[in-house]
Length: 261
Ligand code: R5P
Image (tube, rainbow, N blue to C red; front, side, top):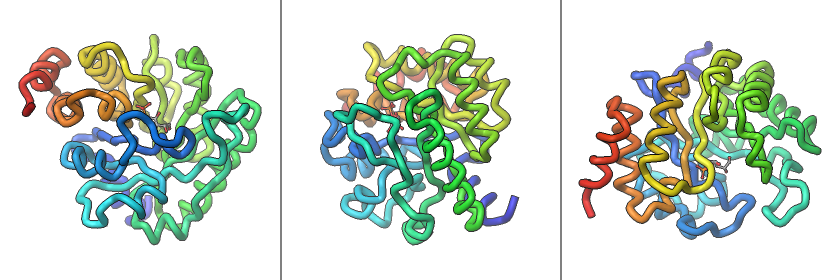
């Protein structure tokens, strides 16, 4: 790996081999989402706990302080909205020269395996990888399921992850599921866990993140389960401790409960 790419990778995967990304990109197809009405404020409130924010260039330029200390992973696909019939109809939205201009450490591209626009989204991934490889920028593939949440099972996700890795993604983001070890063992590059809709309890999130990491994920890219929590800083701190300080879920939960009000 070239020095530039290795250097960028080291910014988004910490020396312990783990990572904690805060997803604040939801507005790119959902508009103002509950808890994420001002993504820039969410970023500045939680930046100290996370290794990177996952964000679109519009929000980055408009709301995020350029002196922010955490890394930036740019979402570079879009082209549909939550009211579109076909959520998979995405194209590349951000050219690689803008990625460089924004000094992003990495980019994220959604891929919709089995959907109407499967081919188009795989080509979005390969085109972005071809451009990013020229500049040493890692690409995170996002195995998107759109409205079909039932796709979050090992057979589908291991196929989706493997295809993204074969295309050249440096990291693949997917969902935690039963038999997650099958997803991990079939994927030759590091896997990061996405969150999904807010769960009933904090402990539930801490438990699935913990299990995912035990089974081989290198970390998370979480959004709603942090900034829709009524104590987002406590939740971010608990996850940071679980990911980087190997705290077990119950102890991380205690940390959550006792964290600043
Ligand atoms: C998909 O890539 C989304 O835009 C989010 O980045 C991803 O789903 C993670 O956020 P959440 O934990 O809210 O699902």
